[in-house]
Image (cartoon, rainbow, N blue to C red; front, side, top):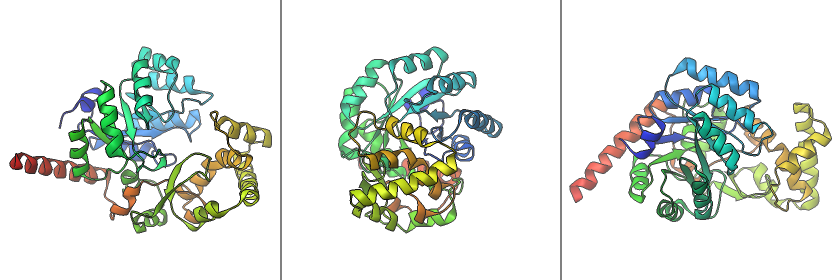
Length: 349
């Protein structure tokens, strides 16, 4: 299947694996790209040296193209882009809109850019700045998300910009790929579906929590880091939702203290990290502290395998997934389903 996305990225199939913190490392990215999809490394939770090692591990496993997700507001964002240029990485993706300078730096070094957007006006803005593609995530998606569902947001963006659009939020099979193409997208991106593969490094007990969820098993909460965040509904998350301000601040202080000990950060450094996450938003001190140690809560579940001690970003699509295929099996199955759906539509016509 050839689309504007496959031609732009050089992959065989218009399927992108998103950069999920503590999940999208060398193993998952290499497996996705080797299977013909396009894997994206989650570098926001990696020191620069670890990112450098990760890129080389991927290169040792596959010569297929892949990308890296970069925090646009990271203090070392320019260094990371320079590393991507030196390592000949195909694409830099961004959860927050990159500055014009970062976009230019990527373009000058031959690295494509693809920010994630949750509104048409954001897509129009970055398209005007010269990005190569946009990833549109509807409200069904996991992690930080907006209120507009994919089926409404996607056609808005497709009609507004002239660059390839990748659809995210609610995709897990070949029917979804065909639907996205029908809306005018050039491909789809999946996070939760790739997290629930045998190539994902997430502990089996955590994966079982995802598999046990139904379509109402996620919740969008601002109690994690002050902005809407779709996560699996767990007793820990429910307690965050119920907590009053005093309880929330006490819990945030306790979690921050644990994170500070684990990370080696001083209290001033931790508070600076929390303030940096505000991005002009009016967050309480409890939310600021929670935002600063959100990586620790993700680490507890995704790396340590302790789902009761952390948060688990999840799309609503978790309620439709019931198996753990390899990336190769998943992509092959998805493309077979897409071909069958396209054939059925042709027969109807």
